[in-house]
Length: 299
Figure (cartoon, rainbow, N blue to C red):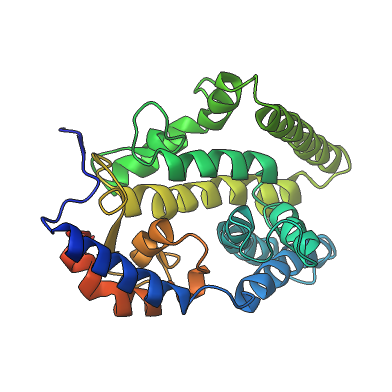
């Protein structure tokens, strides 16, 4: 597989470059700014639903198999609201609602057991070094097909396989932010396993397995596939307009978690997910002129 770096693949002159950039920014600004109410509601409704499953399943209000299906959906859905918080899309530092931004970042991914500081630290590196084999924390998802990507994610979850985020934190051990993220990750991981053990000891091993342990694994696979592998495949190009693609998934954009337009997020990360599709439609002529990877095929 060849690896290329292209900062601006389309052959345009400087005047055309400036014109395209001005038009791109003008359009993007229309979709950036208002508080992303949809994403905030998504966070708390999804989290409350997952919490409610525990008493409902333990007291046989709903069958455990139904709780398992809902819990798996909850885990798969929990990352994206936190992703907005990683980019401070709810509130910037120093603003009155900053506490809400951080709260959403922390609580949204409780079902996934992904510490907010770890997620933010590694995700910012992903944006800075997208598709760089040595510096992109998400590069480990690379695989020739989506089926192989799923199998690789399963292997990556095994104890003997190095955790790519843990490796990144250890490589940046002199960075205070990485140190804090590592400490937070350790505390949250210990709490997770402690809770699972306590539930099993108390006679709720099946509930622990089917409402958290197994859904967490399945949710991780789903998130890795649609948020990391699909938008960047085959991960062989770098540069603002080439490191991410648009695509058309045969099951639709909702099943793909809105990632059909992930190129918009990489170009303008301050734009909330639920506005990406509309922005993509308006920006498409500019993206075509830029030579972006607009691969409107069924994967």
